[in-house]
Image (cartoon, rainbow, N blue to C red; front, side, top):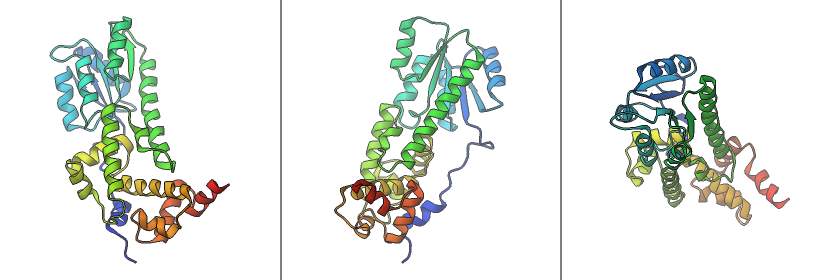
Length: 274
């Protein structure tokens, strides 16, 4: 039987890499040019580094570049680090980006203010470059571990990847839309973007940043996770489940399930019985 549109597109979908390098992109925001140059020199071996002199310039870069993490000073003209952090964490398209705040305001209240605005880490000036390097590496590594856990665990909920309220709301709506059209084998990126009132490029960019997955991969994983739920209930055959989650072939369903989760549907169902 011919594969449906989602099955064939999902195997070939490619998201472009960030510029001409596979290095994660960091955006450093500071009105002190010496600090910008120092941090660029220190971080550029491992990361692609973008620079901005204040929050306004940072937002302009965030609108045109794919950024994995922001390091920002707090005290800056036009838009300070607190305002920038608040903007990032409340804007759907970029709310997933971790933010490290750097400041000479080392009072407890300043730290509380930054964390309440969604900052992922807070480092006092003067700071150790090694400390900053470790913070950056840990934030990026932890995000990657969470993404891998979601993709490889049959029962992990999509919200496990959310780091902000905006991300959580987006992922919940996305999951609900896919589940509502689960029995449609031709559900694809075009339809998903339409249901979410987003452009295809915005959907690709947001999903790839949160999960490292394409929309087609998210559709397929959502199908497979729903299948795992149904296997757990134990009252449907594998053929029935495959059809229920939008697969036109039980064989292809079983192959995809095993490839994604490292276990066949039959073995997964028996595990619950034991």
